[in-house]
Image 1 (tube, rainbow, N blue to C red):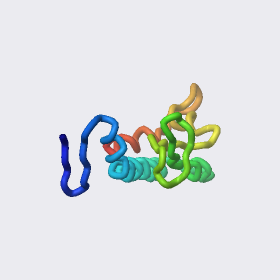
Image 2 (image 1 turned 180 degrees about the vertical axis):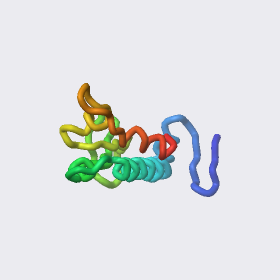
Image 3 (image 1 turned 135 degrees about the vertical axis):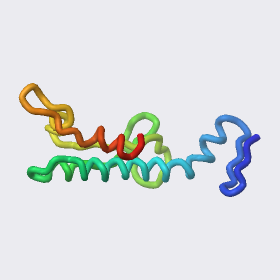
Length: 111
């Protein structure tokens, strides 16, 4: 049995710990996702501002569907840039050098 006194987390079986630590883990995961998004925004090249404006954090449930705020059913957070050319800027093309912004943000955030 695992007991953490400050947070009152108790582990009795493997299923109950996943439910009981969710309120503790989700704010940490969301905070890290927002840090990555902020760093990606700072790293993104600026020409028109569309790429920077498209960087966002989305919540997903266990089935991969987007979820609303509130934390119920949230399993993962996704940082994305939603312009048609976001991947070309990140990875480059045959005719354009890469200008990475998301991968460096991951490294800067310690992920």
